Image (cartoon, rainbow, N blue to C red):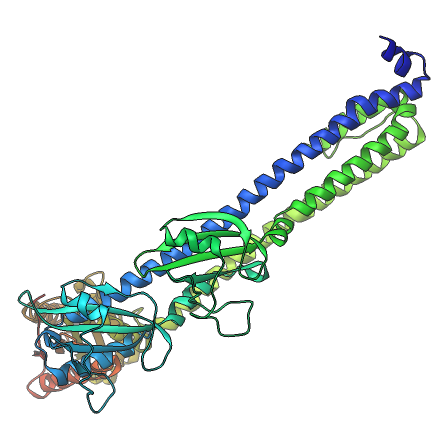
Length: 560
């Protein structure tokens, strides 16, 4: 009680209010600020760790997928019948083509069961070097696909990874196929997710040497720079962990580590501690706390005198402002109070009117923009259709047909399925134009296009190749069924009455069909040209032997 009398009751009201504000506002606010600072620091640290873990998980998945894809690619080669037959000349061509397909491999080599090299791509003479004593060869000889740790190449002294898999013929190992990958390939995967200037991700081996190139050092660091103790201990113990420590540059960092057991490498992501904390908001929060403290002090200096005088008008003003914030821009504030409050009311009324006006203008602009966007999308769609569509018939045009032929060749070749190309030409169509006029000829072409579309499946490609020539691309159908489809189209055309409303014309069609199973051993463009030429030759033969015929050539056919 005596303390209360000394600090509150026996002093002026202004001093008492100041002491009360100091006791019940400033000191608790300071305590809350300190507590919030500590809590925010912990939250920010967790946020940085979560960011690093998200990034390192993405990089780990990328490396794992890359490793699996390379193993599957190599296993797929080992299962190739020509590789299994140990036909060295053919195997060399296959390996050279494979290296052109997958640029991740520096080379792919075929080794015999005697441990000697049998096939080296792009080399005119095989070295026959004995490498049977190497660990990756010995592991593959045991019948398993093996991925080595990062090693120095004996020839180039570059850090590389070896992937080896057995080549089996009837469950008997007849050779070993191994590929060499430069470590730069994995380094590039790691560096795809950038931490900017705040940090880096790098790879370490089981001996504690950095495998990738340091982002912050100019000298070459791969297998030369020893990293600090913290991530190395975690990696050697096979742990996935995180921590705050000083790294190899003696910088305090956040660190997250992953043990990539498949390729025997540790993945480390680090972010500089102080820079990361500042970036993620610690500095902003600190400044906010200081600013809040200054505002509290200013409030104490001026709040005592004006508190009672301003409380009621301000409460009313606050209620009106909330109403405006909720969207009632037409609210008009009128408060019988001091000049400043009245001026504030006038300013808020003016601001409310301006917001209402700007909101209406913005809504009108948004509506106009949406209309313009819809119109633009329609025009873009129309332009896209015009670029691939024949104007007269509505079918695909020649440019689009050429693209689809190559696409379906690649798809059919990868699936080892047939692809058939129909080339159709209306017989004596020139006589239609000469005898009945080009308008009638256009009607015939349109009706023929509709008839051809009705005879095809949804995923077949129908187009006008030029003049009275049309193309139908039919993938994944056996040769005999393709021939039957051609006959059905020919009969439907022969029985159809063209220009029924006027001249009621009877027209026949000649059809040339080329059926082929692409092996993709030659360029796709050459295969497409061969397919078109074969279909055109068949069409020419149908024309020369009496028209109204279907001539088919099956170049080769796999099981479909």
